[in-house]
Length: 145
Picture 1: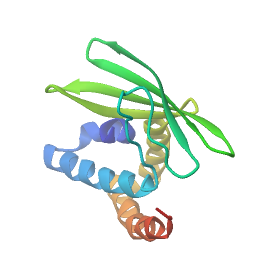
Picture 2: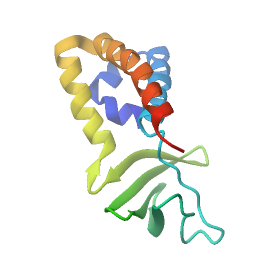
Picture 3: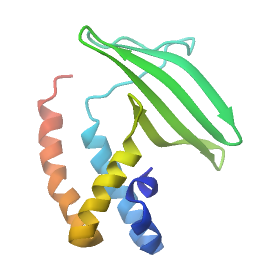
């Protein structure tokens, strides 16, 4: 997901820089999505309820090492479709994109990262993410569990 989100600049990074960006992206993503909680129910067909929200497993399609898992999140205020796109690497399924109401998270980040790298370079993007992490950590602490 980090490589897809970064786009073309990914190919210009050496292996160590790619690993560093993956680590940074994981920190960024985990802090950004800190309030999200998902847990598969005992039979796999539905999710466990958290507060006033319900996550429901809708379907899964697999083809040649790729899978798409469709879910729906319902709350008292809204309903959101959330699709997880996965790829099988070394026997493990890895998320490479999350589509929220038909909008790709990796595509959205790629567009934002492209804009930043166009004006500030890859190093500028790294710097901006490093500056955002403490802000996201603070937000994470404010979100009720």
